[in-house]
Image (cartoon, rainbow, N blue to C red; front, top):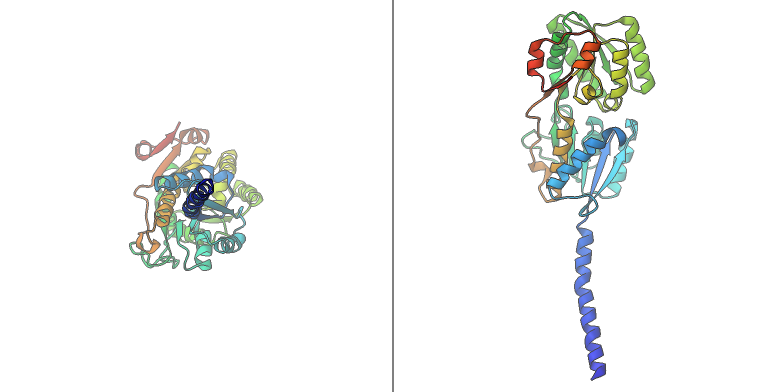
Length: 331
């Protein structure tokens, strides 16, 4: 009897272990993998990544619990993006999130036609072959398009209203960020012609080149500065704001993060919103929704921000009409 009881206990123990093993295995399998590809560096993007994680959480995914995130940062070296993307493909991630710029998205799109991609791009994804249409993407990519380059005329107009005496406007572009540079130059030339302004292109792709560009501006003395959108300039927003203030140049930027760093004014989308939406879409795809069926999102509202302290330091009087339409005023 004792032997039979021992055998029964062993059998029950083994049965319990056999039942528990598939549950453990399923728990392990439930941890899905996200590849996060970005052309910049972690430190300047901490709060944007936090917005991405919030979006994921709202979709039911928490890093370290039921999802793992493999971060790939290019550190400003955009030529590394194809290599970093290939590594994510080799790891067989379930989704690749590219909420940085067009370069990282194009690198991901070139690397895989099967892994879903959720992008955040400042241009028309149809034009770049990322999707068939905004309403029906049709392939393995979808996300957010915030058309920064299509609002160049509006931003230049606001800058002109703020500094009406400026007839020459310098346009700072990053030549390595081809899509943003070309679109800003083209759209800027069209907008400037319509307003009777002259634009002068200045280029910078490194921190030292930014310093050199402002040395050139100090000699040329343009009436105002228009900074193109892009990850590199965003990562150097404090440097740009300090140099613009030091040389007394009124400058307009694409997102309000520059204004918070001391820049004069900005007009464009909320980058926090973009990252948040990319997180939400990533979560929806992890739950089983196909990227082909998720329409490309666009911002409902663009933000106009002003820094009155900077305006005062530059000797500018902000017109009441601009104060009335500003979404954020730093005083």
